Image 1 (tube, one colour):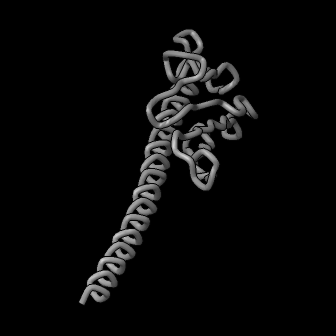
Image 2 (image 1 turned 45 degrees about the vertical axis):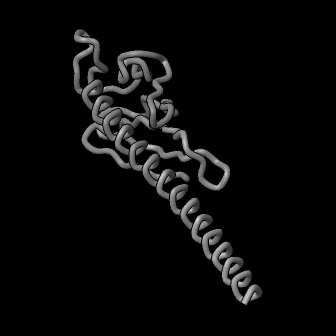
Length: 136
């Protein structure tokens, strides 16, 4: 009877250990996914602000149909490198082309790690639309 009870306890410990390992993995995956979604949402908000800057006249602090004068501070309204709970945001390129060919690229780097690298996404902003690409 003692060996049977010991075997059941050992089996219970193994099952609980596997369940805990699976739970930790699922929690980690959820945290990465949540951070990526929040990062993309912030990037879309920044893209909207960049489009507003593009269409605002230069006399009112805008770009006057250009992204050339766009800085991260001018769209975040606070600092040169805006950071929030979801990550940090940087302007990679601004002012390429004019009119419908004008673009700005904003990169977001998240706070969670996905396979050892931080979650990252990039948004390509045009005067009339934007396109978000998840990098990691």
